[in-house]
Image (cartoon, rainbow, N blue to C red; front, side, top):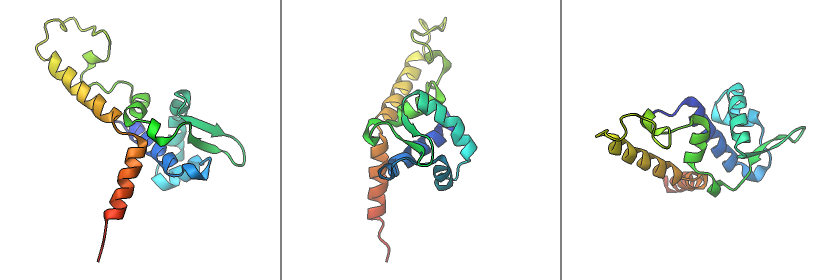
Length: 145
């Protein structure tokens, strides 16, 4: 499983919005500059996040984007699922119920199910707030002489 650029950039965008949530609506231009991501690329990601009700938007002079909920209510898993679709390590786990003709006799299916569960549990166990807190703790603990 590889996370695409779209998924990685969506996560960075959402994290940027979480970091700047006290500033109100944030423009795509400012996110693009801080994250060193093309504004045009972010414009392709925004509709996905908007359709999933992850963002609130405001048009006009004070326009931009903010998170629709607090950072502790967004998991990395849900953000990646919106942009990537399935995060399953093998194609046969994309469908529920499993449509693979060999699923009843596949000796490796439980391995892939277990790996899928670990991936989903891990990604759904990390919130944007967790990332903010971790980065803040790292900054505090970096002490140079």
